[in-house]
Every structure is written in structure tokens, then in C-alpha cells.
Length: 180
Image (cartoon, rainbow, N blue to C red; front, top):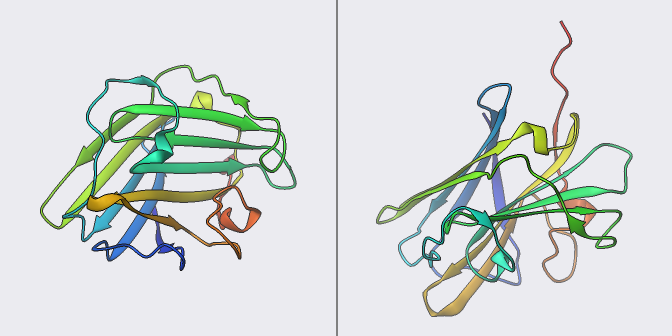
């Protein structure tokens, strides 16, 4: 699993969260696995379990996100993954334009494991519902802590307010597997 350190947007400092690391890898030919490690998670607000299925406005509280695009393309995919087990998947034709639901062959599997100071969120996504590799990608997190404080974490941030759709946030790559 390839692991990345996320940075908090400077305009949205957290209360207690100290660091977030995110990882991406393939479990097998059918599933892509994601993992976020949250240090200082004692005051993390976690939405209650709601059961698997599509949801809306998941980013209004603690939510983990993956953005994917193929190189040299303006179109991209946004996946929102909630500790509630709800998820959302959207296709965009260009930057914040032409949004429509993305078909997924199966529900992603979302699992939250909470500890006193360290928590993990893990997700498995069906590869058949994702664009073909290679990808430019963004791993992000919206973190809500007690009292309603929200912080926005990403691989990189564009100037201005937090915006995970900005091209700057697509800061990592995942190549296509070798044909051999």
C-alpha cells in the first residue's frame, strides 16, 4: 500500500487531530483498498451507522474522499466515503462542472475503527466501478471534531479556501500495472 501524509488547510486548523496519513493499494484484481490513519482522534465526530448505500452531503461531517482522473483529461471522479457506511460517487466533465452520479457495480465497504487517540477508516472499492489506470489522484478528509470544528486535509492545497476539486489536489499518481 502506497502511503501519503495529508496536510491540513492552513485556514482550518484542527482542535486535537495531529496528523492524517492515507494509503491506497489493490487488495486483489477486484478491489481497491484505502486507509486513513487519524492521530489525535479523541474528539472526532463520527456519524452514526446508517447501513450501506448511497448518501448525500456526506462531506458535511467526518468523511473521507478519493478523487481520480486519467492524465491529460479534464474529467474526473469523486468518491465520498463515510464512517456511517454510506457513500457517494460522481463523475465530473471538468472542474466542478457536469456532475452526475457514477454507477458502481457494488457498494463500497466502509469500516471505522476508533481508539482513544488513534483511529482508522478503511474502505474497499470495486475496481469495476473505477476508471482504467493510470490515475492522478487526490486523497482527502473532512474532519469534524466536538464543538463543530472542521478541518480539511489533502495531499496538497490550492491557494484560497479549501477546494478538493482543484487540480493541485490531484498530487499523487497510480500507474497502470505492468502488462508482463
